Image (cartoon, rainbow over all chains, first blue to last red; front, top):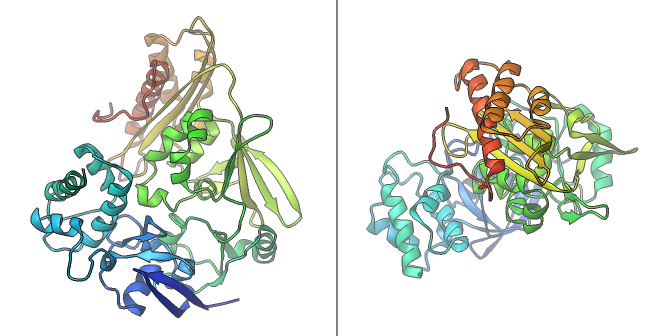
Length: 157
Length: 299
């Protein structure tokens, strides 16, 4: 029986070790324990996509994983996108296209787009829309987000 | 902290997991991909005393050809792996086609085939496909194993033949021999939502296009996915003509007694289930059936 566990994991290339309550979700661990508040927590049942991060390279909902389940894993959060002061091409494209207003959905959309573009070269607009269908944005109407992602795919072209 | 307090175990072997299940039974919940269990725990709709996390057990995740033909798929195989598997597409295209309808890719990256089956949401895709493919499920407990057919597995809304001490370890999909055609259709309000209603079909045709065997399953139209016996019998021996397909759709609608809820009325589900069956049959007859029927509204 355990209600707390020691975990080791890597987040954005940095190693962490921490004693966590077993019922703590991964997103709460990132925000509350590691102070990585870039990842947002919205619906807490996997629908809104705000908490999407990469777990061993795959985009997942960090509200639907326990922190203990990330023991040994390598995570990437929105804080891992920029290279120092140099923004990631996705971040630059979001800025350029006004693909965010309140910014709540942005971390999840960026991490979703990261995996989507890695796996889909030269996507069509329809493919982009399908790719981000698991992330809810209530400000933009999606059009600038779709354009930003298309921009990056064309830059990479 | 969102989930209520629980004791957590992450066994590294199947035997260890089965021993824990034997010990805790009804007090324990198996945590597979967590894409259904975690939301319910976060909202405290479920408060298990014990969580047995089976993500660290080796050997539960695999897609393998069976010696006697067909496929064996480990319960912890992620849905995304099925979606990307050439072997699944070749052996059971119906399963490949249905997977993209499950949630969103971030959900499929984590969600598992066994988790979907054990959870058994009446509107879920994998249970409906397994019922159509006449899949067998391997259930293990600390004393041994048994095999249950899909038709005997789904009992009611979120209820399966799994005993509290049993673990679903693997599914077996039989090989189909001959000219089989496949169709999968569902309708939902938004991309990635649970289906309001859907249909999976398989047709075995002879070289003259006469139907030797038809399998038709509806889901989201009752407590479990259901095979539509009257429509299946009707289509056997037919040429599955336009009229035959319409008659099969009518037989399906007549056989259903779905529920009304905030998402759709019973009448809507009943009518659209027929439409889904008709379209899935049309899809099965296309020379190269497509996985998606996009940009077209239901009914």
